[in-house]
Image 1 (cartoon, rainbow, N blue to C red):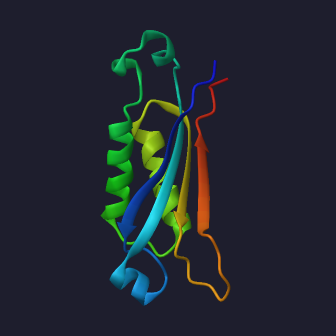
Image 2: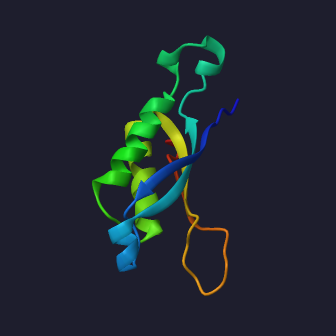
Amino acid sequence: MTLVIELAGLELHGYHGVLEEERRDGQRFLVDVEIEPAEATAGVTDRIADAIDYRRVVEIVLDVFGATSYQLLEALTSAMADRLLAELPARRVRVRVRKPEVRLVVAAEHSAVIVERVIEPAR
């Protein structure tokens, strides 16, 4: 059985970006997280002790998001994925960070970076 936890559209205000005004004024970011627990027992036991607590996921995302000012979405998203995988009982994490007010010469819905990390089973 595969069980995947998803938190979609976590809305954060941060000071990340290459442009000076992005780092000075800040902007809105949207974060999507998918986590595949190492064990899918919570689906059977219905116990929070067997689950990945959404509150802890948000706590980690907020900590990484506010710890430093990143220029690139690639670095920010990678840092989030690495921390989530290191601190949660997960076998796979996928993080997408979207920047809805991306400043380009043409209109765009958003820019985004997706990072996926997987712990491969031992052989």
